[in-house]
Length: 330
Image 1 (cartoon, rainbow, N blue to C red):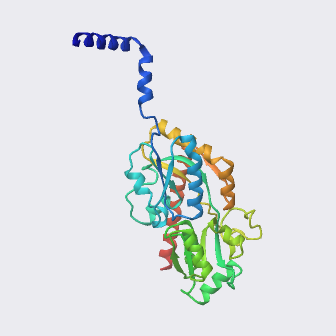
Image 2 (cartoon, rainbow, N blue to C red):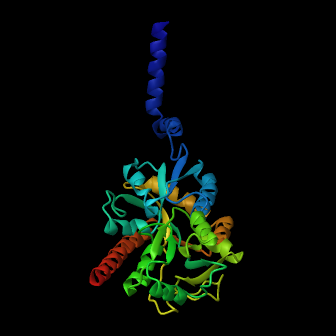
Image 3 (cartoon, one colour):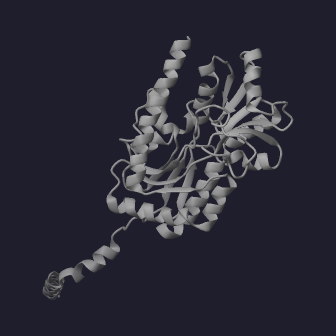
């Protein structure tokens, strides 16, 4: 019996060796093709904000193409940069990805960080940009941006303005608008859009600067929009001027996308890109972006990587310029 078993195994082994490429088919089918388990997407903002909700829909729409669920986890704080340490420390296997917001390209020039937004990531896909605006509550006597400057000039240090965090695009724009002109204001950072809009609505702060997650509140008449930061007026609010129209040479749209850890294998990168690209152009997602006055600004991995390097250089120049003005004034 044992001899027969050895002979059978020997013939089976010889048959497998002579079968050529076909011998590898069962092995390939048995191996773990990417993805073979859920993918974790980190969002560096509080749950319930516009970006969080949009990315949750994107994750939902990408799941069928990827063949696995995409689980969204939030890590708010530090101006939208807290997903960077996660990417830096994650295995480059495609199961950990994160949103890359504009502040990650600015933070290394404002504070000491242990990560690099170009060196430590693999860009996957650019998704969109945001519409920023200056807001006051509907009952506020402020009806135009110039009145905020007048208040700050007459009552230094009394004007309170909320943003979504220190070092974010709204914060940097405020520095350009106020500090560079010798005007003082109280900066009140919040972790998310919902907290910020509630603070403005309830009068806890006199004004707020945020991305277009404020759109439903403005459309409902609970908040008043004084100015937007785009190159042209928003089609949604055509009567609201841009900063450039008001005489300030500032355009800020903060493009964002998804990235994985440094060193993602090309085949894994391709799977992630293709899955999220399909979701990106899904009519449901396009319509969802439009709710927040956003549109698809797609870039693939190579072009997005190039854009990230360019944004990093621009942010270095902007921060150095801001520090130079502060130094000159103080």
